[in-house]
Image 1 (cartoon, rainbow, N blue to C red):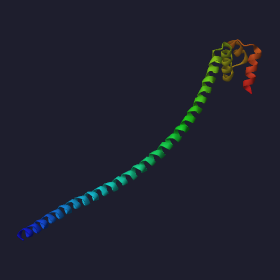
Image 2 (image 1 turned 180 degrees about the vertical axis):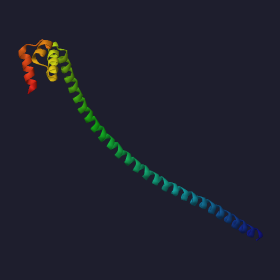
Image 3 (image 1 turned 90 degrees about the vertical axis):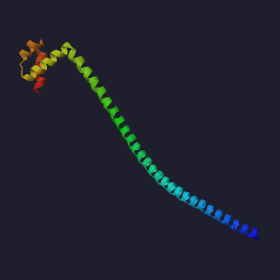
Image 4 (image 1 turned 180 degrees about the horizontal axis):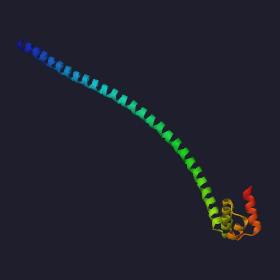
Length: 140
């Protein structure tokens, strides 16, 4: 009987120890689950914030693309105008290097300064009819 009481006491002690051990294990599991749940919520918030930032960056990228397209169109327009200006400048330079054009250019400057027909004929070596034509055109 004594042995039976000892076995019962040992069984109760082991049962109590198992209960305490299981209680400790369940407490740790409960605390770990709570911690993981908080971390999961923090990760969800972080994910939502990153999604918002990605959306903002996509909007900014779209604006930059639209701006770049506008700038590209403007650059093409300016390049076209520059090509026209270069072509016109080339034409003007070729006219300026033409000795005949230089004479007429100098004659027009003289007319603008108020020079007379005889002075234009003498300096530019133009025929009288051409000198008179330049003076009459300028007087209009």
